[in-house]
Amino acid sequence: MLEQALRVFTRRVGELLDAERASLFLVNRERGELVLRVAQDVAPGESVRIPIGSGIAGAAATSGRPVRVADAYQDPRFNRDVDLKTGFRTRSVLCLPLHDRRGDVFAVTQLLNRRDGQPFDQADERRYADFAASLGVLLESLVEMDDGRGR
Figure 1 (cartoon, helix red, strand yellow):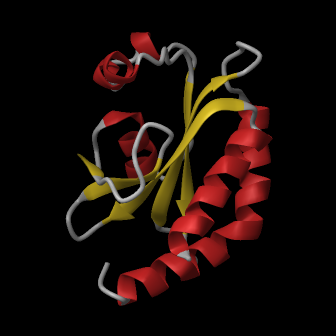
Figure 2: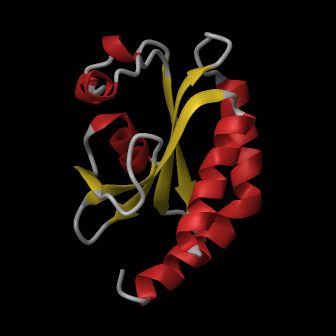
């Protein structure tokens, strides 16, 4: 049930903000890492883990604030290896933290390339905040239930 909810949430965020790609990382504080749970280039069940402070998604996770990058290749936090591996060309990035009831970040949504070719902007952040506010508590509860089962 968690996997399906995460996929639906991530797909809807991508549609809402008209992004070419959308992915979702869950925060694992015990291990100090972000775990990629939903992404177009990652097979279901495949695990990709990165240190919590690395990359653009890591910056959003550690700061608790959205991170907007107009030109990914000009940002030193951007990992070009993923583009090289997949053949995708990242232009702009928007990473948006999802907070739990205590205010801690428990997930980060990463969006790549607005379909209109423009970089992401503050209006995109507001649309995400409105959408996430309505579903954040539900996702948090599902993640907690999943964690309780030992996954």
